[in-house]
Amino acid sequence: MMMITVLSGVWALLLGIVLIMLGNGMHFTLIGLRGGIEGFSAAELAIVTSGYFVGFLLGARYAPVLIRRVGHVRVFAALGSFMSAGLIAFTLLAEPWAWTLLRVLIGFCMSGIYVTAESWLNNAATNETRGKVLSAYMIAQTLGIIGAQGLLTLGDAATAALFIGASILVSISFAPILLSVAPAPAVEVARPMSLRNLFSSSPLGTVGIFLLGSVYATQAGMGAVFGTQIGLSATQIALFVAMLFAGALVLQYPIGWLSDQMDRRKLIFGAASLGAAFCVLGWMTGGDLLWLLMVAAFFAGGVTTPLYALFLAYTNDFLSTEDMPAASGGLVFTFGLGAIMGPLATGWAMQGLGPFAFWLVLGATFGAIALYALYRMTQRPTVPAEQTESYLGVLPTTSPVAVEAAGTWCAEQAAEAEREGEGDA
Image 1 (cartoon, one colour):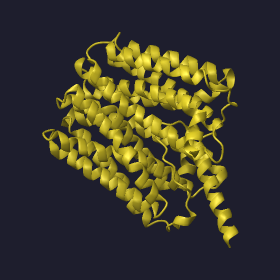
Image 2 (tube, helix red, strand yellow):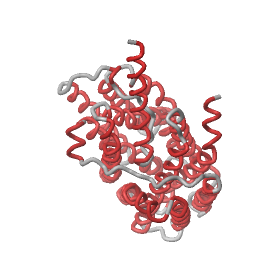
Image 3 (tube, one colour):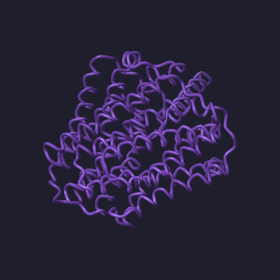
């Protein structure tokens, strides 16, 4: 009943987010499909993929400035218009440099859209409902990305139809949002903590989230390129990409539950090792056993999103409440740097070693996360589970606004638990 009450106030925002993610999720996979048809190399598509994350970082930095200058509604409408136009423009000029510029534009627009939508969402939530609202938001995003893969099977990537469909979805997504939201106060995003201070506070959180950025961007951006290069059909590629995200829906909650029960470094080690093991399985299939390839995608993709939330929660364990917002911004920036580098490294490897280097780079990166977590266990004592911050499943696609809101919720939960403990005593 409580959840229905919560959703009644934000359903229009969530509906808009699902529609945006349907359009954005379609375009991510379409880049790999259409790029293969146009004869782009893996290295060229890697640069195109990285362009999105360059734009995303720029948007996270400058969207709050734009919002403070002209307001939420104008920024939201303007970015939506540019994004919708950008999606159609992919079919007009099939050149890697043009696609890269369009991806930078779309990345910037999506980041600004997230900042704006999440500001409204956070403003609509109370201390009691913030955790549920954020959880609903994360589920809406994930369902949108998975649903987008289903829509790809309805058209032909060789024509403009699917790009136009993605553009239409983004265009209509703004109607429920703009017609329902009240003006929110100007968004305030804390200045990101410097990488040096972030690393000194939590070496594992900083290094881990950088490497995870590489993993996430490679899966989201290069998964369709891999599928195209090994000869999967468009429907099989859509299923493969959907599996990368579907695993997160299933694994988020058990990993989240474990996160509050045990040493988080052990859980990071275990989840990263699981990811590496299934990357090895994906590599060993050689593309012959489709169902095994899907299982590998389900688990390798499934641990990625929970690891992101895990790194955020682990880093917050070593910070004061006042430092959490700045650290959130620093972690989002660090993740973005990794997201830019990951596809470039993977594209270069696939160019030289063949398409199955996709799994080798992913597996090696997961392995590096696991080994570094193992090393950090020898360098710092365990934080007792009862003294850790609460875990909230935050997606890697969110802006610093949602990450900060999640940090605030976690700090509130910890303070409430402390007050209850004092009351019992």
